[in-house]
Length: 479
Image (cartoon, rainbow, N blue to C red; front, top):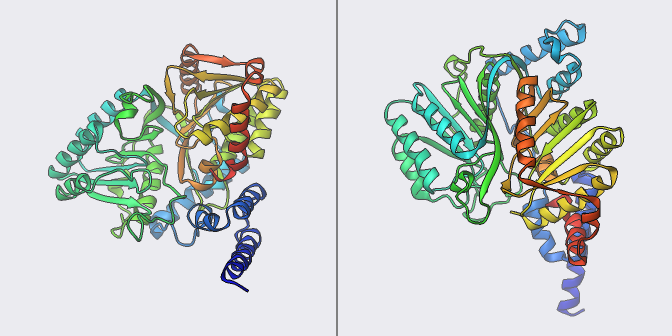
């Protein structure tokens, strides 16, 4: 046999071996498995390298390790709350009764302790959010803990750096964690400037070889800020000028972020320390000074995390449970809408049951394939009777669900396969009519800046758009 024939046989055998590994060893879901098999079939050599980077499952062995004193404390609190729920004696506010099973789900699924004494402020504008965050950091006396997926060394990035450097020089312990892939444009000069001032800086999943990162597909998409263990921020805003509406491409940036004061900050701090200890060689040990939160307000919250290290898709399961609990309406805002079959079925069932389901997406793509896959799934729900709004004011990046004006979820998880299975995410599940109504009011304000996509309009889309939808949907399980 000549060299060409030998090479082709080698590629064929190797592809068969890799296909065997995907089907029998990796144990992916069927949709993702078929998508990768198609990639291997049509682009065998390139497909192999794509699979190494984007397709491999992440081992969850000893990934997030918590010291015994703290970990036992979490487990004990979860055990107590589970027992109270099972006995029917859990102290739930009268207007929140009926959602015990949602509390229970998050407790069993994610050790997400329920707290009911929080004060929450909602931010939908980047300037206001970062003004508030910087003002809180300026008042820090003990520590500042930050984690962001995207950090840019632009005007906002420098403003954040200046604040952190100033506080570090005052003796405040400052830790700054960023995702290596999301912040790939961050210059070393920026990082050295922080470190030289005494700020502890770490990146999540840095490459072993510069510019070659085989964990590129598993990103820490979380955005958390904890100040003195008393104040916590969680939501969709990253650090960059575009999040202030300064991007010519995207224009006004519409997002949702929360400022939380209360016992729930303890659970945000726990999540931060787990992430920091995974990324750093200098672990944060259990110290009471990191858990100084005090009761404030009456908002019930569970902080729920999910990621590729998890056995269950905790946040997605929470979304499904919320939707199945709906009696009147479900309002959803998401920049990407690529639900798996379970979530798509839950939304479809809600619509067909007479629930007013509204979904709002942006009018412009920041990831074209994801955008056109979104349109494909949106079309199916239009046929079922859902109302679809296209946000026109700028770019919609909010990850928000509100059900019946009683419960809500705000955080970092989009409605797509990446957020549910590949990214590390964190959401606040909120049990408060007051907060839910505030989010409903913001939704109605956004409708004023949106156009409604009707079924008749959708059916008039061009053949070219239909083609882009079809291709994008085909590869959506691996986007």
